Image (cartoon, rainbow, N blue to C red; front, side):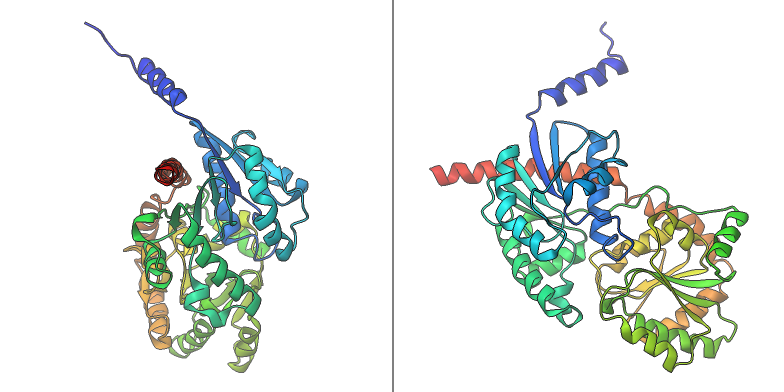
Length: 416
């Protein structure tokens, strides 16, 4: 009788993997940033996490990522797993300014893809170059610029609307970060549903409950935070709905004068000036704190030390801070629109973000619920465990394989 040992099975798996055709994947990582501003958030973190996840997986893939200059290449390379899972190439042109980056993407990048022999090119942020020499994948994070154009500066609005629409039409496959974003693509940009794949973002492993009271007390003391506070964490920009949050908080204090302080943490984005004027107009200067930029390393502690996390956004591609807060076991109140229910699941409270009274009463009810913290510490991390970097990277590998196959089939049809 023949027996197959686990080692033999693993060897067979490696043999099959080695025999699979190598796929050369190139990614545009120009927007990866480690600066202390709003650019070191959202799509920057998404792209970096994807590179790290792909580098850890291995398999029949060769990855090349184009980054913004030699200094950024060194900064990205140092934390990546193993240091050699992804080859980093700095752009030959200066691309620190948006106009320079866009020109490089449209003119120089297609030539660079030919030089590296790319089988598939992936743009993790909405826009593809034209005249690509290979299969293409574009990730669409949201269509806020279409749904809420008034919240964007004119030059950015025009660029994003026009180039995103072109990229959606041209891409071999499209990745949406949520089912909500997929619906927007089909409805607002007439994207063929059969070319859109949904891959949720991932949560880093250090987002988890912090049980040690001394650690939390030291963190609060370091940042001059009170023992109890309500937290918003994200870029200060209009669609985060922070004006209504401030108004709802003022109503909460009328209902419960001993309500904890409201802390609005995050870098300044755009059109944020009215927030400061509103706090002054409502006489809330003593009760509302603008904490400014929060480093990535300390974000789990900002969540874990808060009594409630508040994220009443009007529109999100996915709403990753919601899932991060739940992973840290923090009671969370968010919106019942757009993609927020996908990030919140059955754990976070969901309200109409346009209804200031509903938000105020949700905050009051959460503060009165003596069992809410224990339930969230149990259910939040369990819910968030589905959003792993490994799962995201594996799903992208499937998309890369499919894109190459679809592109090969399209070329075959054109030749017939």
